[in-house]
Length: 256
Picture 1: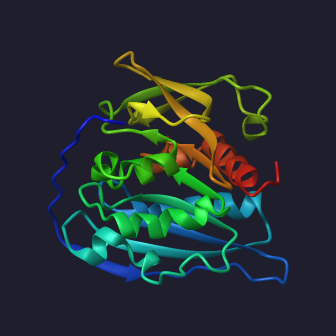
Picture 2: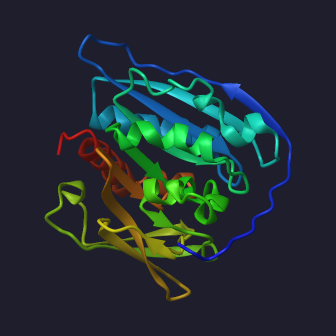
């Protein structure tokens, strides 16, 4: 993880806290869904992702923290309001990240605030643009890449992507076909990965490049499930993605 990357981001910001919950039960699983940023329909994806979570874990209680905007160097936008409190992770059983709001911003202490609870055992699910956050950290502490399990600095052009699910006996892939092609793709190039990452699927776009597209790994004591699938809403609404996300969530929670 030694290559340099410069990314300039400029636009306006509006940070809005948003809360959504199922009816809590005494034995409910408490989940934090961290989302927002530019380049994707994050507002529209709230219902898509949370419905997959509820289907996979019926007793889940979901809190959504969303920042709206498209870039900009305002600290509130870059840092994301979910992490304002240094004890932000208290009481949660899992965090699902689907955001792309701070690729040009890096702050060592702030990133440590985010990743430390996961290092201590808090499970995480990472979707698509999440791995494109905090790019400058690759040349600093490397904490974000270690947490994500991969380094991705860019992606191919929008085109159909063919996914091959490679580890057929892994519980995350139960019931999924051997191959799946989705039309509105955005294949993320994987430039590096940390030791211990298990690749579960690869993607090939019309440009002919192959990259890991689904993976699992352990970050300290915490389980991390990640996928770079998820650019278009129609892809995320598909049975294949809903199954993959739900079973990835279950695996992160130790239910698979």
